[in-house]
Image 1: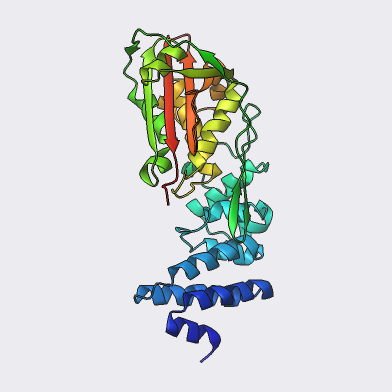
Image 2: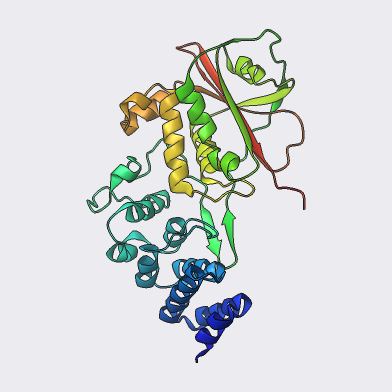
Amino acid sequence: MNRLDELIDRADLDGLLRHLEDLCDLEDWDELRRLRDRCRQATASGRQLWPAASYAEYRIALQADAAHAGAILNEATGRFSIGPLSEVVASVHDWASLAPHLAPGPVRALVAYERVLRGEDLRGDRSIDTSVYELPLVLQPWEPRYPLATYEPQRGIFAPPSPLPPLRPVVLPLDEARLAGDPLTTDALVDLTRQWTTESNGRSDAVTVAGDPLDAIAALGVAEARTSPIPARQALEMMAWTAASGGAHGRRRGMAAGRFTAWWTMASLTGLADDWPVEPDDLGDAVESLVFVAWDTAQPEPGWTFRLAVADPDRGLSWAVMAYDQKLDG
């Protein structure tokens, strides 16, 4: 009985993880894949070895050559990985090296969209199923340079969005603004933090009012606030970063998903969601007509927070969203 068989037979998770590190040092990706397969089989029979199987997939996606990384991506779930494997593999391999090893379908498209975020122009590649997100396969001139993830063997490093300008205290209106019925847009704003609220400890709320951004912020029940106008590009960056994140405990969705959710939210705010997929130039022009305001509650806010107000002066409508998430004590 070889070492792997002995470890599997004993359900020795610590030993398997040490063996996994040895295989990574040796760059023996075929044997590491066999470890993943054996741990999967053992898990199906009741032995709790799924952490080793999941971690083996992550290390192959991160450190192996494009052929092995692409092959593991075709069949891995990435459910318990540090980050989505499509983002992991795209962070270390370009599209030309990965494309021959990725099966047709959604996973291939997700990797392509992650490579677009890293500056590649893939508009000419007809093998990519753009129906996954229905976004252009190249960054638009009006888009920000999104904050991207960097992965290491033991952790992910998730770049924050650009710093906000200084926020100044404001006087919020005392009279309640008239709420306006716009469930599509309020749902889109709340959906930016879906992972925070469904997989972690987060809370999120959004409103639509007939009025200005301060009316919308006050409609959330906020007593004090500080605000600053921000450009549309920075608002899009904030939205994408928020939607890509898992918050305190949720599973990270990845920046490709963050970009899509931000585009959908912008389309909802501009009234273009009914015409989805939108023409990129049309959306770029439309978002410039909106007013974006970053804000906070003038109080310390530990953990993950997302505060944004938006106004459409032409329609006399404003929206505000308030979300937070934090780690449980202990």
